[in-house]
Length: 345
Image (cartoon, rainbow, N blue to C red; front, side, top):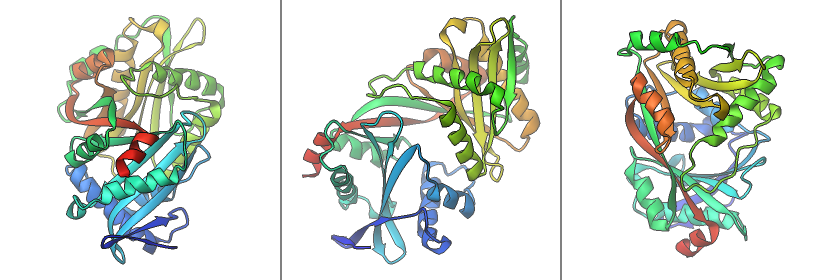
């Protein structure tokens, strides 16, 4: 591959899908370094888990990657740019990560310029990036470029060692009349596919604040691909779908996933109640039922982590009531491609 000198650095486009373990080693080491910076309290995923994620491809997205080398085998920064093939086709998700020892040397700007160039003319494109309050330089750079915060997400966690068991039992006993829960593991049974897809689509009703994006187009094929990728990553998945008995219609869902190699942290996937079924305590019920099941099935787990739009008052109220506490904030930034082009020039 050809390289382009950037001061004392070299920027190189890389193909990680077919990379050997040896060639992936600098990228895994870099992921570990970022993990220790962002969430130092968590154990690190093993090499093979991160390598699988780095090699992952899917017909649902197209991803390009670049590396910045300080020296052979010494990764100073990385750039990834992804686009969906199904929805929000005008959005390019850009991830710029710079090693703490190589910050404030213009590398992030150079990588942004690389992403801009890779977009070509790109009329109407929007660049989108995520930052965490755990790493303040990310938000500072996004603000300098002229990007605007589209959505502020509160990241919260529930400590399962101090969970209020009596509250969980009360909520799990709400048992709204006329509803039942269907439990699903790593693969949705065929007869529940339509119910699950309908339930997940309710996530499109969450607040988006100032984020410019359309609804996610969730289909049975989408669901099957998500499940395939989860299995390939070695993850465990648990979902509870609430069904209205009289009609068989989906009413709500909640789901979680975790890596059994590092079962300390369970990640909340999503929770939503379809509008016509709200006001019946279904959200509390299904969340408590899930928590109770996780306590039984994953005794090694210490935390459940979730994120919610800062303006999602209904879901925040449920989470706070369960004992979730804020731990950091994630911000989704957006900038039109033309504005990004003006900044890097």
